[in-house]
Image (cartoon, rainbow, N blue to C red; front, side, top):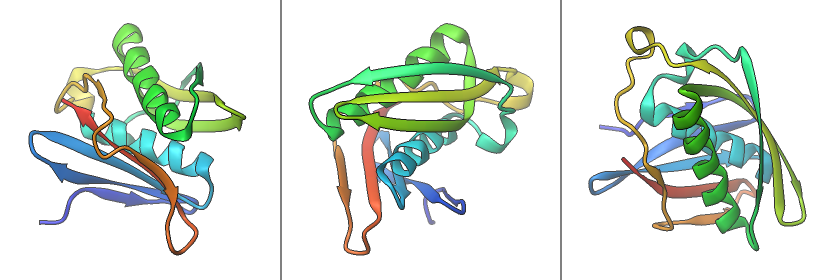
Length: 147
């Protein structure tokens, strides 16, 4: 059985197996798209991102000394916003400025009956953490999330 995945014009995301937790991987032509795609993969751990209307925007800023730690901070910021605002996100815009990430996430409040959340993501981990370019020049941003 193939793990879940999705492709868009600019990037794609997929899950990869990892014992009891779930790996999220964002793939894109730029690092920004890879981080946005990793965020889509995070949402897809919880629910179908297509079921989430991007009606409310939430600004997010993260800082870290390198791209890998920035990915963990980005995903954990999304987990925090989902938990505290009781929202799910389906659209993302990411910009980098040196070691900081400035982003907007769009989504809506969780409706359990409609979104049918499968699991609660507790946070992004350093397990299998990587942000790099592959042989084809695509950016890959991945880590395992604790569920």
